[in-house]
Length: 188
Image (spheres, rainbow, N blue to C red):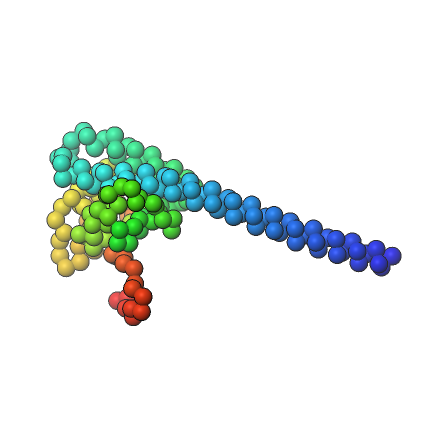
């Protein structure tokens, strides 16, 4: 009887190991599917955001041309937030990431320009914690289309957003890749 019990225990352990491997494969597939989903919507998010930022140099901010792209921006950010919670956009040199997923914009020349648009104000990343209203998007566009102010324009932007009651957004400093062999600088 104890031999039977040992065989059953051994069989259960093998089944558990096989189940664990199957679950790992399923998770990997889900992660890949999620990454592809985020990449597709993240690309749309980045392209729309860059487009409306660039529009500020062509149109007055009260122009009706902003209505449709701002609505599209809000639609895609809502889709992302429904799945991811907060949406984190990070620009590092000529690359963009949405929630740690690299957005492949190689075939689009504007990929480097989004970083440039933000960098002028000392911004390298934006976290949206709640879907912005169209008015909040317009306020963000207004601030980014203005000349950078002060020694730390990112802090000025954050303060202006807070003054307007837009507190569900964080702006982060400029990011860059460290070169091989380069010493790590302390964050101050």
